[in-house]
Image (cartoon, rainbow, N blue to C red; front, top):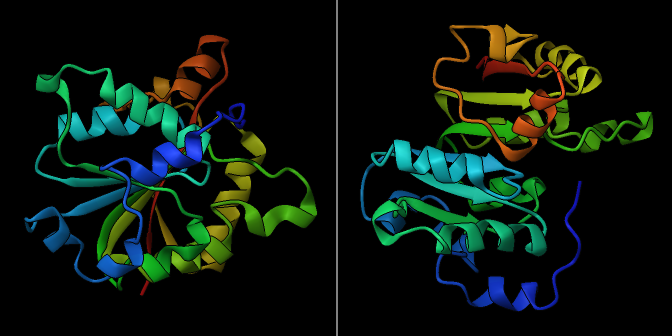
Length: 218
């Protein structure tokens, strides 16, 4: 669900130092941008940012890029970061306000180690299947930027979207590495889980959380 439009959000995103304004200029040289050789992981549709902020705190040896299409949503994540104590802020994190469809224009082949998709828009109407971020259309775009052994992790509380996603994997030549229909009661897959805002809300009312981990077959 989209947040209400925040007046001035476009300007705030355009001038914020952590928001990269011309990301296509860094295509093929993102490690140089981060001034290190650390792996790069991205979250597509990062929402209010809690998941990625905690992930970046937990793994300072990894570079993270949060991708969000809507400026009002991205601004909420940035405001959350700015409210943190300086000693707690992750410095291995940057943001892009782009459409996921443009990923191959932003990242070179094999430049990304892992992709996270959390509680993506289910686009429930049949005619909108291609818009789902786990559709074969988007899986083909992810393939263009993931490293050979790179993975994609997807979480949702939407059973229809989850089963659709499972069906798209073989069609796009992706391999299912792991899968659960009840993440919070799966000791192995839930071991290092970081909950998103939506995940906490949905699980608190008894909704099971579905998760899959997949990699592309080349």
